[in-house]
Amino acid sequence: MSEPETQIQQDTKDRISMARMLCVLGMIFVHVPDGLSGTPIYSFNTASLSFFLEGFLVEGPGRASAALLSIVSGYLAATALARSGATVKGLYKKRFESIVTPMVFWGVLTCVVYLGVSLIRPTFLASANSLLDVLNFVFFFTEMPLGATMHLAFLRDLFVCILLSPVLLIAVQRMPWVLLPMLALFYLFSHDQNSIVILRPLILFAFTIGLLLAVRQVNLKALDQYGPVFIALAVVATALIMMVNGGAAAGLVQTFDTQGMDFKEFVLYPVSRLFGSLAIWTLIPMFMGGRFQSLILKFSPYLFAAFCSHYLMLTLLYFGLWQPVFGDRSSPVFFVWFLAAPITAMAIAVCIVKIAAKVAPPLATMITGGRVRTPQLSSPIKDRQRQGLALGAWLMTLRLFDSLTRSPVTAIREWWAASRRLLLGRR
Image (cartoon, rainbow, N blue to C red; front, side, top):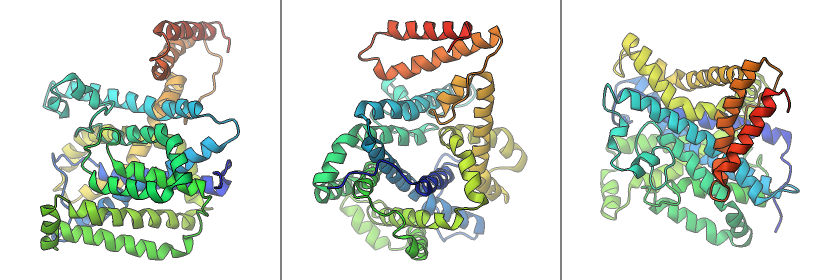
């Protein structure tokens, strides 16, 4: 059995960066705030062209993006483990810093903001009946509760996949014909988040496919010639979803219901995610080598912060500015808000990170999961003191991963030593 490639070619790296950007922007479409408590039902039974187009973006690339993003993550994890000198512990540590730390930061920040809003009006925090319910809003230990932090559960599942990756790699190398069908069935029959280990089995299934692609050293360009076919099939699959949403195939849907299965989750969504992922991946070469690729590579370091912060920031912007000025979902210009939401979220994230980089550079590193690293420049004593405090918070968060085996006193001593070096102008 061949081993994963230890180095990824530059064009493949660029393609993965573009895939990540398109996937995150697509996922943001699913979470655009509209002031409604429930999710809109997108179907052909509407006279509004804007609502129809919105439905295609949500039910199509919006829902397929999580699958492709998970595949890419699995591919990168396998490649990272195959590098010379790589260790499982090193992978765990790096991914903890790049996934869990910012997840916790943005989750806590979101809860704090909504706690303030709760003084005026009820929020999703009101559904918490126990300490575990509160912790699940940030850590998602046992479930993915509905609310403003729900999208962060994707990161929780992704980190669990990272923890399982050494075992999954062995299984993928020795018996993929057993593992993948098992995970596929797990995905189909456990989509209702009743598994504590993985809240969304789709992520585990897609992540494992990424591992397999790396292990088998599959040519990631092999299917590019079929791009138009995948795009067409993705459009058809999305159209079928919207038709069923509108009441089509009611008898078939009822048959699945009597067997305890959701027809869309069991049939339509898997097909849509398959062809949608392939459509996005094979569409990327059309935009490589031009201005679009340059822009994506330029803003890629801010993408993770945009994903983590988008729902909180878009919600504040929607209720604080858009709705009072332009009206709610019934407004004829709502579609403008919907289309602009991903770019708006990215712009806000860039501003947040740049401000953090000037005020407290370690904070910029933390909130982006290490994707934006700022140089440590000489500064006046007050700036060094401020950096020392920020660095202390950063180091305390990093040491959370080792808290089960290391004393808190050790972290305090390290913070004190690091702060002292900063104050004295040392590195």
